[in-house]
Amino acid sequence: MKITQKDRILQYIREFKSISSWEAYADLGITQLGARIDQLKKEGYEFKTEWESSTNRYGDKTEYKRYYLVNDMIVDNINHISV
Image (cartoon, rainbow, N blue to C red):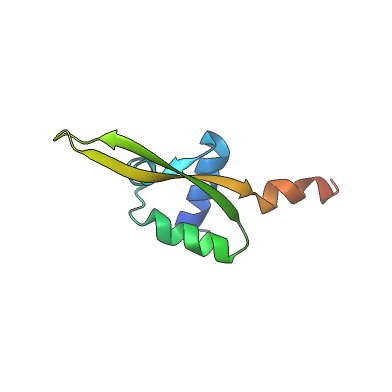
């Protein structure tokens, strides 16, 4: 079974607690993080966002969103699964 970009994003957030568009690109090869987040929202996941800023190599200020998973359906429901 092939792992999807959405699965990679969820795994990344579970491990590192958040993700930015730069991290999605650099670490996961995902160029359209916002589109994948929108798809995950439609599937029932909830996210909190914060704007962050940095300086690019030309000295210009750049702004981007950082996404945090608020409602992790898998983790929240894992306690209901009997082993």
